Each structure stands twice: as C-alpha cells, then as structure tokens.
Length: 234
Ligand code: ADP
Image (cartoon, rainbow, N blue to C red; front, side, top):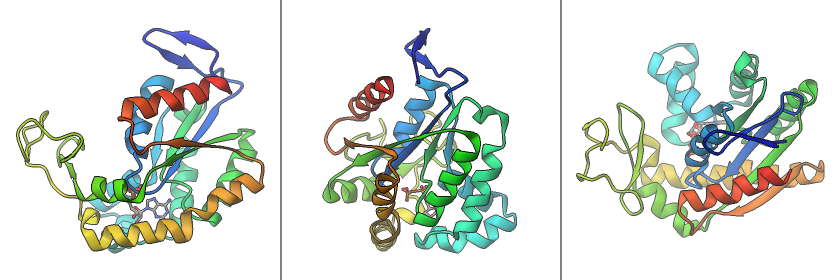
C-alpha cells in the first residue's frame, strides 16, 4: 500500500499492490465528497455508479432510458446493469493502479460480483464505512443543492453558496436533484437499510478489511484525514 510520497501530499500506490477502495455508507454520508478528495491524494480514479447512471440518462441512450424512472424514484437499478457498467469501467487502463468505488456495491449480489472481479485481478478491497447519524443524513440530503453546469455540491447548512441559490464558480442557478426530494429520500434510505447495509456483514464474514469512520460531526477535511491515516496504516 502507499509507502512513498510525492509532491503536495500525494501518495503513490506501488503498481504491484493496487488499491481497491470501497467507500461505503448511506446516501448523504459524504461518499462523493470523500472520493473526490481521495482522487487528489492517490491519483487513482473515482468510479461512481450514480454519476455513470446519471450520465447515461443525460445521453438518452439505451441504459439511460431503462434506468431513468428508477433514479427519479430512488429505487435501485438492476444488479446486471450496474455490474456490467462497473466491469466495463474496470477494463479501462486508468484503473490499473487502483480505483475508488463510490456507491457500488449496493446489494449483496453486487458485492459478490465485485469480490469475483477483484479476485480475478488479484486485488484486495479496503472498505471504508462512513458512519453518520440518521438526523444528520436527513438534514444534509434535504439541504443539498447542485450546480447544473459544473456539478459542484452545496449545502444550505454546512456549505452555502456565497450568493443564495447561485453557483460560486459558474454563476448558474442551483438545483435540487430530483431524488433529493423528501419522499424519494425516504425511499433511498429504506433501500439502503434493506439492501445495502447487509453487505457490511457479508464483507466481515468473508474476512475483508472493513473500517468504520465516524463522519457525522467533522467537516469533510477531518473525515478525510481519518481515511488517509487508515490508508497509510495498511
Ligand atoms: P446516493 O448515494 O446519494 O443515493 P448515488 O448518486 O450514489 O446517490 O445514486 C443515485 C441513484 O442511482 C440511486 O438511488 C439508484 O437509483 C442508482 N444507483 C447508483 N448506484 C447504484 C448501484 N450500485 N446499484 C443500483 N442502483 C444504483
């Protein structure tokens, strides 16, 4: 695992031991934010199934048409669809030194597929479970706003834009993601409890490295430092 440092705090993962970092946690636990910070630290790509699916919806292609209604309703997309997207993504050369999974796996069937894909590559996963109080999650998700142009995320409570309702970078009018509306948030959290949380036991029973990181109270940089310390320990 990381043992040499280059430049501005960046960690190089030696090519013989690529890192498969699984960021795990409920919607609103900060997986996407941490993934972006970790990309900068490790120089390996973020693979977000949510972003990939939203991109297909934007392109109006076959996958996009098939999944659009599910995304709007906060319902999980079929395992075969996401498994195949991840499999294709992992075939890209930029994943050779490792990658950060954000929002995948989300069911035990997906976890099973991931374990098989990683075993075939000879890579061990490191699972970081971002633990966040339920009430904090609700506050974060209902306060979330996004720039439709550059994708920057804001939060009315913790990271408000300088001018209310307007992106600091693009000047565009911020939007509420369709699945951040309250009934859909409830559905997403239920899906998490029902289908995704059980993966933790599955991983632990298989002897995978799973670390709980408290992500309720610290700002993103504080959570990031805890994850960084865990990675350096490996
Ligand atoms: P969040 O983690 O905040 O719910 P994501 O961007 O990860 O947001 O996911 C948005 C939606 O995309 C999910 O509600 C679901 O419909 C779909 N999705 C993303 N990843 C998966 C996955 N691994 N399996 C099934 N559906 C997924």
